[in-house]
Amino acid sequence: MSDWKNVQVEKGDAWALVTFNRPKVLNALNRELLEELDAVISWIEQDEEIRVLIMTGSGEKAFVAGADITELRRIPSATEAERLAAFGQRLFSRIESLPIPVIMAVNGYALGGGCELAMAGDIILASDRARFGQPEINLGVIPGYGGTQRLARRVGTGTAKYLCMTGEMIDAQEAARLGLVQKVVAADQLLDEAKRLAKQLAQKAPIALRYIKKAIDIGTETDLSAGLHLEASYFGLTFNTDDRAEGMDAFLEKRPPRFTGK
Ligand code: CO8
Image 1: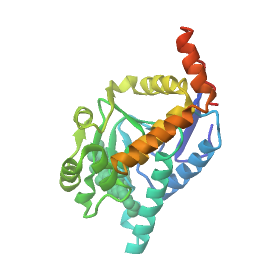
Image 2 (image 1 turned 120 degrees about the horizontal axis):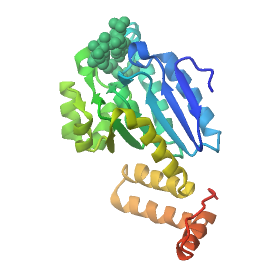
Image 3 (image 1 turned 90 degrees about the vertical axis):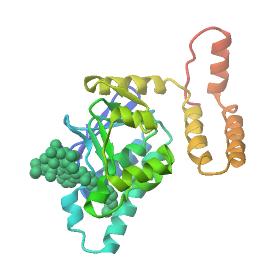
Image 4 (image 1 turned 60 degrees about the horizontal axis):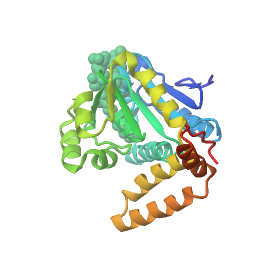
């Protein structure tokens, strides 16, 4: 249902599926794809029917094999490289701060910018064929779309330094052991599992989901007492919602809740 060249978008029952679509180059991120993705995010932001976003890669081999190295090679100056890194970082931060859950269904290589893009999601599901890594060091550069920062926050500084300094790839099981991946599934089950999880999340109270996301994302960037203060304040805000009354009434009446997002 999209007019985009490098990104396909499908809308399902309360979820949207974005597929990176440059399979000949393992879905490498060129500027055009990033600009399209930026437009897709704006479109998703204004569609209130979409309660969960799923992202995946086209083809059997890759989620995203990184920034497009052919394009990187042609960047004329340090200033231009910094500008492109900042553009990608802003886009990934927009994805990270969407008010809905974002599931990254990693179907193959998630390297460099691909690993960085996966980490901008809330939950990473991986196929048993997925491979993760930050191989920029092998090109004589460093991660530029948030890899040094988000990887360190997800797996700790020692492991992040090991992966960024060696450029080694890890498989899905190892990524799960490190906490980078939340669940590993058979390759042919990945999209079904992502949609099943999306449906499960779409049935939860959307405002409470949004506050969970904000409390964890903002709270872990601050000290414990400020984070706890934030949690108490968001907890209070959920009490202004219809869904809070519905959730508690449904429990007491021994029936499933029907949340409306109000
Ligand atoms: N960019 C451009 N083309 C790519 C990329 C890429 N990142 N990855 C793969 N391709 C192309 C290959 O060149 C090849 O093209 P062709 O068929 O024309 O030869 C095609 O995709 C298939 O790839 P391979 O033949 O290499 O497939 P293999 O199965 O042999 O290997 C690998 C798969 C291991 C994934 C291998 O392709 C590879 O190592 N790719 C590069 C991985 C990488 O280094 N990624 C990091 C890139 S740098 C980065 O992401 C920085 C992000 C921050 C940027 C900040 C902005 C400035």
